[in-house]
Image (cartoon, rainbow over all chains, first blue to last red; front, side):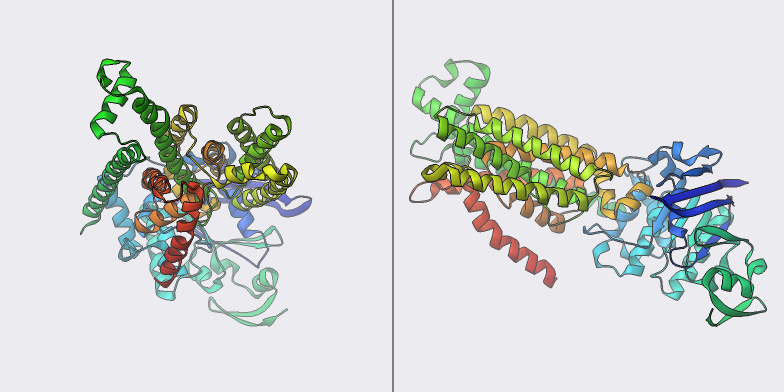
Length: 251
Length: 347
C-alpha cells in the first residue's frame, strides 16, 4: 500500500528550475535508497517529501492527504527525518536528545516512556552514551544518537539524508539491519539519501536515481545495475558482473 | 544507577537548587534592607511590610515615620528592582542563547539595549536643552521596543527569523544607534555625565513605579518562557531537525524573540545597561546544571536575582560612596567569564 505519493513534482529556486516533473510512490515497509551526484536535487526532494518546502506544482501526499496541509506536529508523529549535519551547540545529554523524539506525542516524559527510550537506545547501540554530552561525541556517534531520537518518534516513514555518512562500517551494518528489521516488523518505511552506491545496491528494496533534478531511474537494484546507469547518474564508466560493479574511470 | 533513578535524582538536585537560591534571595533582601546608615531590625522590617500590605497602621506602632519611609519607599523598591532585573536579564540571556543557537549570545546581542540607551539619551538631551523634565524610562522603553520592531522587520523580510539574520539585523541596529548615542553625548557638552551615568547601569534611584513595571513583566515573561521550553530545547538541534520533530521554528523563535526583547527593554529602560549577568549566569548553569530550558530558565532567573542584588549590596558597602552596579558586574563578571571559558576549554 502506498504511504507517500509524489506526483508530477516541480520545484525551482527563484527562477532556476531544480526538480522537474518527478513522480514515484513509497510503499509501506519499503527500504528505498535515493542516489545521485552532488546537486542532483536529492536533499531538495527530501525537503518537499517532509513538507519543509512547498512545490511549485505537483503534489506530495501522505496517506492520501496533501503533506502541506498536515500541521508540523501532526506530521512529526508520522514522518521523522535525520540529516547529515549534527550541529548542537548546547551540552544536552544523549538521553535528553533521544527524549526529544517524544515531543510530537506528549509534552512531558513519564516514567513509562523511559523504558521505550532506553530500549531504542539499546538497539541503536547508543545507551552507552546516555549520560554523555552530545557535544563530546564524534560525528558518527552523534548521528547514531540523532537516529535513535528519530526512532523514538515512532514514525511510519523515516527519511535519512546522509544520516549514516559518519558511521563506521560495523555501525552502518548494524543500523541498517535494525532499520530493515523495523520495516518488516512494524511496517515502517525508510528512505535514505546516500553516496555509498555499493551499500545502496546491496541493501535496498528499490533505488531512485536523480540527475539534474529529473528522476531517471526507479526500480529494484538488480534491474538497474548496468553500465548505462553509472554513466547516466554519475558520469563514470563502470563494468558490471554478477550483480557487482567496478568503476573504471570517468566519462 | 538506572535511568529512572537518575532522572529522579536530577529532579531532586534541581529542587534543592531552587530552594537554596530562594532562601539566599530572602536572606539578601533582608541584608539589603538593613544596609546603610539607618539600621532596622528584621522584625521591624516585617512589621513595616505587613502594615503596608494590609493597610494597618497599628502593625508598625512605635516605628518612626522616617524609618518606614526609608525602608518602604527607598530600600524595598530598590532591592526588588535589582532582584527582578537580575532575574530578567539572566532569563533573557537563556532565551537569546536558545533562539540564536549561540552559547555566547546575551540580552544585548540584538541591539535592544542600545535602543534603550538611545531613547534615554534623547530624553536626557532634551531635558538638558529645554530644561523640561522628560521621562527617561518611558523614552528608553519606547526606543527599545522600536528597535525590536526594526530588528524583527529586517530579519523577518523574506526569511523565517533565522539566527544569523537576527544577529546581523541586531548588529546593524546597534551600530546605527551607538552612533546616535555618541552624537547626543557630543552635543550634550559638559552635561554629558548624565548620559554616561545612565548608560553605566544603576539601580540606586529605582522607586515603586519602576518596581511596578519590572516585577510583573519579568514574572510573566519567565512563566511564558517556561511554557514553551521544550520547543526551545529542540531548536538547539538546528531548524531542520527541530521542524522534523514537530516544532514550528518560525513561530517559536518569534515568540521568544518578543519575550526576551521585552524583558531586556524593560530592565534596561529602568536600570540602564548592566553587563554580564545575562551572559555569565546562563552560560555557567548550562554547563554545570542542565541545558534543559525548563530547568535553566527558572534556575537562571533565581541565580540572576541573587547575583545582581548581591552586587547591589556590595556597591552600597564600598568606601567612598556608591558606584553604579553595572560597573561592578562588568568588573567582576568579565574576568570570571574568562576563567570559566578557559576552564571549560581545558576540560
